[in-house]
Image 1 (cartoon, rainbow, N blue to C red):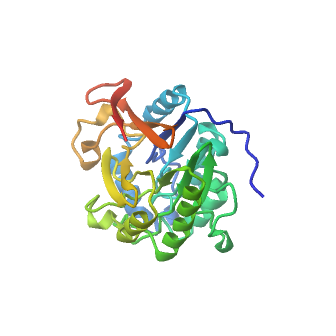
Image 2 (cartoon, rainbow, N blue to C red):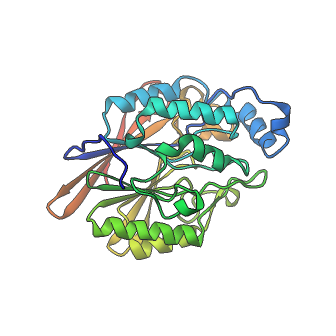
Image 3 (cartoon, helix red, strand yellow):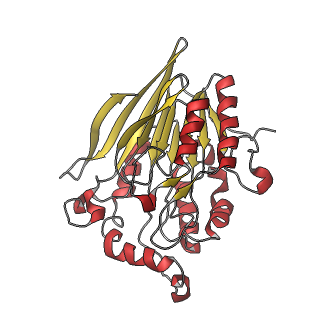
Length: 318
């Protein structure tokens, strides 16, 4: 039985996309919690991210995004940093403030799944935000992803690429079973005539990032899209705005990344690898159908270089 929803779609569907929240500041960390990969992440936070991602930037960006009144919000991972129990709890509270589960869709990132037990914990805490309208193909294994959520004529398909890795690695994984399950959801949405949006944390295109941060199975993901098609793929992970394409059976499928939603504009010019990336931004997609043809316009909002106010930065057709 489909889960009940009070959602009422508008004629034009407006989808907002944010990613890489990296909620700060970190809650108190016990010494025993650092006896794992977390020690490297903790040092990285203290050295590079504490100043860049712990002010009011995220709060201001989200407030601006809400004023645009999107029909739905996509969050493509890395809500937290070290997958601490308190971080997971705080992120659940933040999601409740962001919006009700039927209007917010989440997929995990590598920081959300930082340790071997983290995926289970975030599923328990965030499940309403990353589960489908119907039980998904992985529910038999206790996993809500991949999921399919239909909002108006838009199908939102959430895929998990987050896996616990060794220290100094931030890779993601897209396995054969993931591909088979996701392909089935893509076919289901196509048969229903829906506009298909795929959410994944790691970028699935060639040379998207360094080898130790890449998506393992990216070629498998691309082959799936080449065979099944999609209309739009949204990701995070790199903390930059990117736009690539994957060949699909009905034409190229745009693959779009967005900068971190919490990257402070006040530190953008400082040295260090975290400060070479743009300040916080979000993308707003206006999806419409004219006859049998879909149209999609992207508006990019955020902090421009050297500015401390949020404005429209760019508009483009997808």
